[in-house]
Image 1 (cartoon, rainbow, N blue to C red):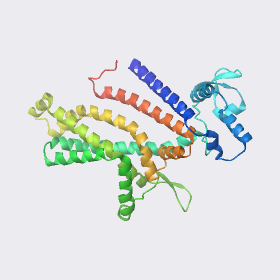
Image 2: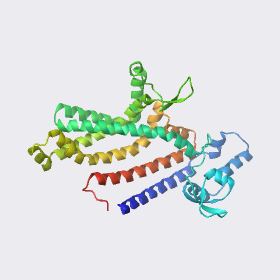
Image 3: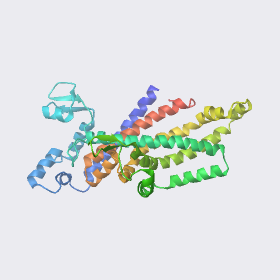
Image 4: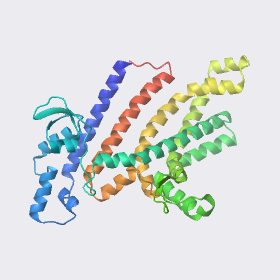
Length: 351
């Protein structure tokens, strides 16, 4: 188990390193001037030089890369000074002028707001996580239930209808579905549904000025985001249940008079969940990225909408920081799921 976890963490670390390298070089070769993005076309030549020096853009490209990696690394080398401590909030390991320090990864500052990228991501990622988890929970519970029904009614009109609807759900792109759902349920039928086209998890009370939780704003974006994984889970559950129900031990349990609901829940479903767990894990990580356009359409305050707006504003530190965070989430989820997969199925061994 320890060797397996170590290998997975090592592979994940290499993946994140690859993402960092690709992002940095894309940033370097992208057309446009980062100084222009910061200044908005204002300022004289001297001011532009000062901004470039502050951003480290006056250094050779390899020097910029080393500085960027040093800022990202939780174990780094920094000069011990009041300005650096304020910037990085580090903990010195060796108290010398240039010390090895422990710190949180520093993702830079937003070109537009001048806020720390880490603060912006931490503030917005709550909405994305809540949206993705809610969508995945809805897709898993409903998808598994529908898949079981389809398997128990195989080759009937119920099975054909459910499978056909799942194919439609897989086929519709998320951004198209988002527009349709927001238009019909959030606009035309809003008088009956009580739902709005746009809204976030937290809204401002117009009378008191306080932040208030608005769970109903979660319904439309979560349903839209959940439809595709739900459709896939339906088909996976149906196929897995049909395979398990044809096994000898299921027929033996029936012959011994075991109640049908116990056969389904205790024996068949447990053994049919392995491909579903794999799908859920993959989709949970994908939904973090797939929520970007959903958030933008529904005006949901989250990391996705913020990142899309940052792309339009050429706020590259924010775009790069958000991408790195999503990559880390992918890696962590995949490691956790590999372990859970082995725990659920005793036939799988971690070597």
